[in-house]
Amino acid sequence: MKLYINGQRKIGTRDSMIYGHFIEHFHRQIYGGVYDPDNPLSDEDGLRMDVLEAMRKIKVPILRWPGGCFVSSYHWKDAVGDNRRPFFDKAWRVEEPNSFGTDEYIRLCRKIGCEPYICANAGTGTAEEMSDWVEYCNLEYEGRYAKWRIANGCPKPYKVKYWSVGNENYGFWEIGAKSAEEWSRLVAESSKMIKHVDPDTELTAAALTDLDWNIKLLKSSAQFLDWISIHEYWDGIHQTNDYADYEAVMAYTNQTEHSIAEVRGLLTAMKLDKKIKIAFDEWNLRGWYHPNVHTVEQGRTKKDYLYPRDKNDDNSKYTMADAVFTACFLNVLNRNCDIVGMANFAPIVNTRGCIYTYKEGIVLRSTYHVFDLYVNYMGDVVLDSWCGDMEMMCVRNKVGEPEETAVLDIVATAFSGQAGYAVAVVNKSEAEAKKLEINLETSGDVRMYYISGESTESYNDIDREEIAIECEELGTYIPGMEITLKPHMVGVIQIGV
Ligand code: AHR
Image (cartoon, rainbow, N blue to C red; front, side, top):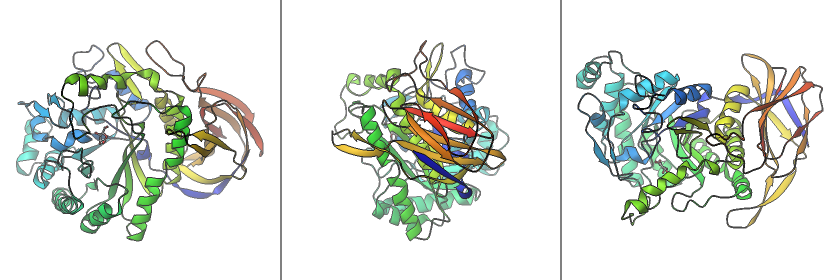
């Protein structure tokens, strides 16, 4: 196959926030995940130092918190100051101790070096409660909530720039679900109040690829919004935990762009595509396993709805299928960097996250290394590239139907601050190496950084590392140079870097 790269034609410069992450008060993401005060591996703030280091290595640019469904009955005032009040989290049907709240979260973001991004309660919450939260975080001293922050030992405002009105309030499963009419009114009033507190905030609101919902939302609130939020989990196994196999996951790579295309079309039609960007602020190949909660009939015993959540911790399930899919989706975000300004992998720690914690350490799952490759080896200027003779392969999707999909998934980039090029190449073939001829007017040394594993089922676990970034020196670049791509491989080819 022949790849042509036009080093002069820029698609755009991607925002580093497309490599963002999400962490929710669910299962072991916070408690026993990043926040583990009794663990000797934790620092003076109770934060796991090994987790912080791993987050810093992939340069987490933004961290969305505290939910997700959790937030839709969460009251932030119960989780700041001296008198933390535990509450029954009706979203996940567990007691939330509230020992990790806004101040702890901000300390976490400062230690990672990332932007905070707070999703506010538009389920049982009010416009006033949401805007009070912004007062607490962003006002110098005016009013009761800034003074409360100061009394809690934080004299300077946190200046949280990114805020979301609500989570998935369109869904029947969400506490405080809303109709499109109710939603558009609530978002308008909440956004107005938040902007009155701090006009420098950038606001988003939950949306989906439903025209009626989005048209009503944008008609009522576009003047206040800077972003529109969409979510997607392709292998939706939250009720069944029946993982799509490698071949079915490759079929899912045919569905990675439709949500962006549909929302882009609507924003363009409403002449909002220059004002509002897409925040793909929850995404992952696999839905989280939490049976009998996102259902009308709730689980009656903890065996029905709570204990099964531990099955998200099975590291053997996070294989090269997850890595290949994740790279294909990051390629989509790069190719759409003109309209997608943020994306948040859901989540970062435990559940389906790229970092798994256990008492004595962490496991970096396959997807972690994909973020490492894209954040630390790819450029930020996305270039026009095409492969005229792309091979197709036939795979069976999860319901057994045959689908065709391109064997390779490629994005070419340059660097805004230095010479050289970096090309992300994904070989989706389960068993076949592929040869790729690269045509680009440039020179310099060629190195390929990649992960592939011995098989599609390779995975990392405690005392088991089957997937790690390897480097292949490929000599001096000459136009038309042919490079061999291993099967089920995610790689970044650097030229002249
Ligand atoms: O499965 C986790 C949930 O997925 C998040 O809490 C919610 O935002 C989405 O429905």
